[in-house]
Length: 288
Image (cartoon, rainbow, N blue to C red):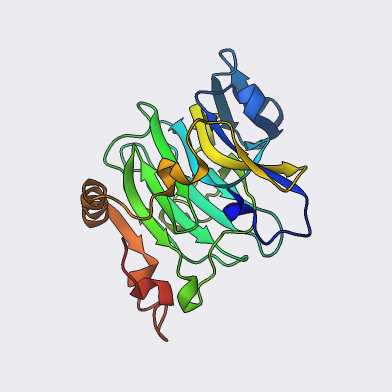
């Protein structure tokens, strides 16, 4: 149990496993900016963020997490969403922060959203992979998940893995493993870059733009000040958690290959023009 609490003698912390199943947004999140544009309703089961010409909006989790599985269902801005970005991510704070990103880049009506992913370690990102989705993310809710263990980070959409970022510390690549992170989400205007490199601007006659959230779940290690021991509130041991598994199983590997073959539209590991001196070292390792 102490495995995930080593190396933090400067802090008194408690690391405990929690499993949150369809918890209340009132209990789990704070609305942090945007005034009335961020709302929790339906008894705490639904949350919405809105963007108008004056401001966007956002929220963050009350708890910090270090390893686990995070699930959230989102229904994205419908219609002409060009220029808007809905961001949903994990992040620590400070100039050497770690971050695990989902960003949904809006587009003109009828054109697909772009799902932008990135991983920051010790303040450095530039690890972008982008995808089209195989469904309309504005018609219904879909589940977007992050699995974060000491071995890897896996991005999933409706339980289909779309990206794996493996721990490559053995070849000198930093990996997020020591900084607890909160969950953040925001809806904001980014028409200087989000849609076709900024060529398509936000149509404010379509405002307000609104995204919806439900069914937040976390099977994760939460951190708070207290004692230095780790505990579990579930019947299974810490090491038996499903997200702790070292590698994707065969069906998941097939799904990953399918997504990356047919829906990936940008991969920094294939961008030789961007890295003329050679691709980043993690790009030369196996994806699985």
